[in-house]
Length: 263
Figure 1 (cartoon, rainbow, N blue to C red):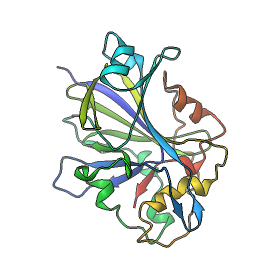
Figure 2: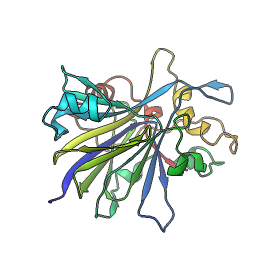
Figure 3: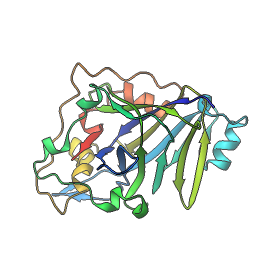
Figure 4: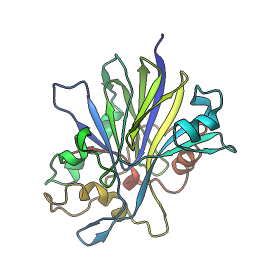
């Protein structure tokens, strides 16, 4: 079959991790569970992680039934959107192309630049065999595609990955089962790690999760990255992904709500 082009947006607290040679995986993206935590006296805000699948992206004839049945998601008939809560999930695609990182992706904030003590994430975050729902909401393995960067309304960094999938599928393994989600070519989906409530939002309580992941090895205070610069384009409208679209165009989405290269 001809390659199926899939676009995946990574939104919110997502640590991009470099992978040593010797593996098909070029990058890992870690969405921490981020429910209860504290770093240097700062109580961190609870987060949840979701996979958004617009109905137009799904190959299934009965999209609502596929979403709620086979994919174990929640279907919104008003927006034709399938939302899957991710907990302890491993996510991947199959592609024969190499990974290309564009200049805009290379503008992703560096955690090491904010915290001189920065170290690699421990194996409980990066080893797929050790994935546990209480630690990792989603672990995404990137083996190829084109990574570009874009920014939300208030400067938060978002990553876009365009993949030529060999089999037109997005794979999600969680709760002991692997779901093969067949997608149409040109499909646009998103994974977002977002705060459960914005009522008590502070930049430190949000961005502090990056520090929490290695809190035993670091002592630097929480620092917030600058807004993505003018060379990083604004994020496009993500048709059908109502929650993500709202966040990208609202007054929220400051630099503390963005992706980070780790360490």
